[in-house]
Length: 63
Image (cartoon, rainbow, N blue to C red; front, side, top):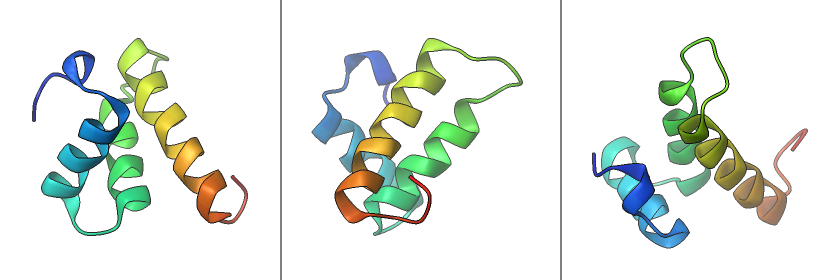
């Protein structure tokens, strides 16, 4: 995958979908989970923040 720091939010969503499948919210969630390594990192916060934006837009469960 392309370095997350070089991606706009739209490009990040496209890259996540290319890697994990058709559903943008789920694909971005997978990227957040993959970037979490037991500590809060800037990459994890980027993907988690993007996931929360998408989830809010779709009104997914708890988000």
